[in-house]
Amino acid sequence: MFERPRGTRDFGVDEMARRLHFENLLEERARRHGFKRVQTPIFESLDLFTAKSGAGVVDQLYSFQDKGERDLTLRPELTAPVMRMIAAERGQMPKPAKLSYFGQCFRYEEFKSARYREFFQYGCELVGATGPVAEAEVVALAIDMLASSGLVEWELRIGHVGITRDILTTLGIDSAAGAGQSEPAIATALRLLDKGDWDGLGELFTKHGIATSAIESLQALAGLAGGVETLPAAREILTGLGVGHDSLEELQQFCSALDLLAPSPPKLSVNLCVARGLDYYTGMVFEAYVDELGGEGQVLGGGTYRLLHLFDLGDLDPCCGFGLGFDRVLIALEKQAERLGRDEVVAGENTGRPALAVIPLNIEPENYLGLVAELRQAGLVVELELRKRGVGKSLAWAENMGASHAIIIGARDLESGQVAIKNLKSGEQSEVANNCEAILAEIL
Image (cartoon, rainbow, N blue to C red; front, side, top):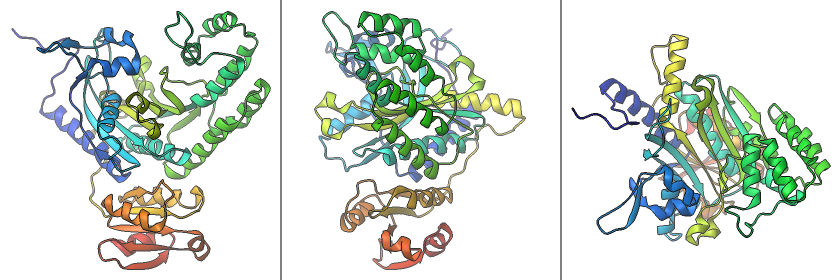
């Protein structure tokens, strides 16, 4: 008898239909937000992942040598391969690049509930644009995906590694690895903070001659349970530690943009000690959790990070993206369907509607992000211009993105309560009221 390898699964007709439906739902949501699908090989050079995560990762990989004695591995995740693909283009890919991907990944570890040796990941990356609005674009897609799947009672947790790095640097934690150290002290501190290991952090502070009294302030920061209303209290703690507020202001702007751009998650919490345990994150980080999965409750995670410098493309850093645990979301949906007595496991719909490009001209995000969200919820594919270019270049970009219409919003439009809609196929331009209903009536 030939048995299925440990930690893998077969998918029958019914289960595969459900999985395909979920994949199509995710792809449609990504497409509505302007993300386009790419694909990379199922095996890669081993060096790609040791450069990203260190030599210690090898024990967790399905690594091997091919007949040419090249060191290869089945991919354990998809972010690094996508970065490699971008690097191979040597900057020729239009920026900002909004990429989505889906595929099998492999890790060599003991199988346990909701964690398989062969698993599937859906993810998205935004490369070549930075700032709170760009970050909100990414997180808004993540929220849209989970909400559209039919998942309920999940929690979105938001943090900012820039804030914790600022705190640790101000306290005197080194950002460079010293002699005999496997990693910089700040990386160790971030990992301890993420785990809430206060004893370990105290030992690290003592080793570096830092007063352990600062840990009380960090514990207070971690204990701020709640949403954006906790940010003023965080500001007071940072002031007490002598830390500047630049990163906190960025997080405040991000939260404001996200509130306009995305539907509200069932629960949103801000935890400024969430670091995701990975050294390459630099700014905003976020995770989604579902109680039905217990200790393995995380179903999605990501943030702003730097990896392209590994390929000498530092000018494109930072990036912002996330990975969605395809299998974990499906398991959570099954558990919730059973609890709630629902027949359908995965919700969602697929529609084909015109593609729009929204081009804001020197106006604040709160004047257009709400409209973008409404148009997407109405079923349209909406690209958002993030580069603050002139009208000519923005319209050329919109055509290259495949948009059929462009919505142009400037200061005068806000005063008149109208927007300009340009038909990119015919070249005709019209003025309509600045609301979702009027725009839909014009283009449909």
